[in-house]
Amino acid sequence: MKIIVIGYGRLGSQFVKKIDVQAHDVVVMDKERSIFDRSDLPKSIKVFLGNAIDIDLLREAGADNADVILALTRDENTNLMIAQIARVVFNARKVIAVVYDPQREASFHEAGIETLAITVAGADLLATRLVGATQEGTEASAPLPRASARVPLRPLEAQDGSFYVIMVGGGLVGFYLARALLKNGHEVTIIERSPEIYDLVSQQIDCPVVLGDGSTVAVLERAGASRANVLCAVTNHDQDNLIACQVAKYRFGISKTIARVKNPKNEMVMRRLGVDTTVSSTAIMTSVIENELPTTPVRTIAKLGSGGASIVEYRLNTVSPALGKHAAELALPPACGLISVLRGGEMLPPASTTVLENGDRVVALVPQEHDDAVRTILIG
Image 1 (tube, rainbow, N blue to C red):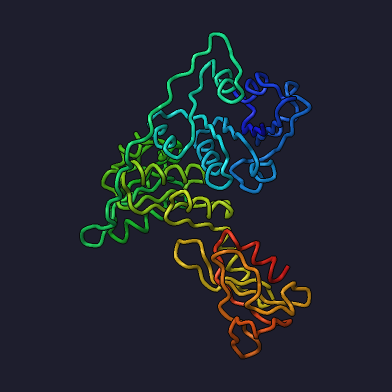
Image 2 (cartoon, rainbow, N blue to C red; image 1 turned 120 degrees about the vertical axis):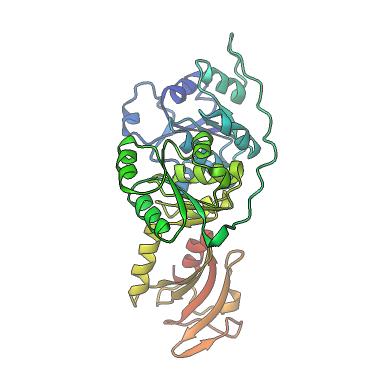
């Protein structure tokens, strides 16, 4: 089997010791550079350094053909995000994530993700489940039941046009966003896990501030999530923002969830995992810069709501692989479509009679997940 172990801490290292690394293709991934200094790391194992919530890094590690992906880091939200990416993006046959909050387990079982509580026998239990090893004295707990029906979403409505907004993250982004919402007459509660930031924000803003992890059921309950209309997760960590939005939507029925995304590559997967709207400052700045440069080969004309599609303009040059081809015959990915070909001051239809030339500007409808493929086809 091909097994990817994410997190080479206490549990990950013990698991690797328990299995036959010669009989299986084992890959270890960790974001700590000290992993290369570990004397207990078998030489036959491939090692990748980096954060596994990066889809490209997971693909490089072989997630496309992995039989098992184990998310064993010390951070629960990181494990849950990795596990969902493994399921939704890479269709991994077996995914196990270490979690600490039992209130979340049933929901993630429903998504096909096994969860494992940390115990002394954790590594033995993993080895037994995956490769049929038998360890004397190891007891596996009974599998948890699948989650009951998720809480139905409440209509996005509020009296007098105001909303109750929960802001997860009280840093600069959350603070100024909350202040703007309060000024516009909305009710706001901020959730902040750092005691230092909590103390500072509590003194500077006139709204409730809750100390705790905004991705947990208990803290969201304290913040009044059962009556909230909107949840904005604006922490510095994509995994925390994702899980906060999912818990808000599926456990409390909050109909509108908005997540700040630091890594633009995570926008697509976070929307696929249920987040209604994602906002990436990196993607916004990149788009602004590209749109301001007249010679840029790719320009985003418009983003279509929160569905992840855009109308994009591609300027063909002398090395564009699409030159000399008929517009209607380009083998674009599914759900992509040419809108028009701009040549000089003329707009041409993307028909079989339109042969693409140097200098043409090709306008296309492109879902985010196919952006790289379309770019390669049109401009190389």
